[in-house]
Figure (cartoon, rainbow, N blue to C red):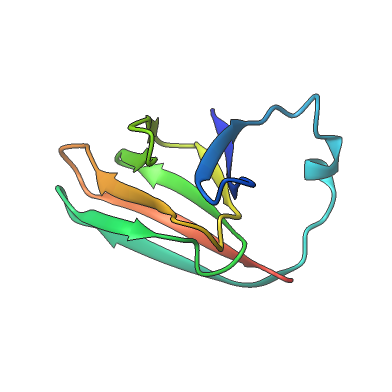
Length: 112
């Protein structure tokens, strides 16, 4: 299982930070949430440059997604992978479904 964080750097670009449970024990604390949304995105779906609409966890349940950054970096997420999306400003990222099956995710909207 991968745990990543998308955030906006001082340069205005979205960056990806790989996280691990040992260095962030606060992740095992209770987090306040506003709600939960389940989504299925069809094979080949591509979402052009965008920022996260709010701080949120996006957890891939099935299928695979790919996050693209301005520098050309692509990061693949599969079942069980967690993305803490905090890039609510800046030039954003792209997302694509890269598996041969739909990507099913659960998105947890975090309290501010």
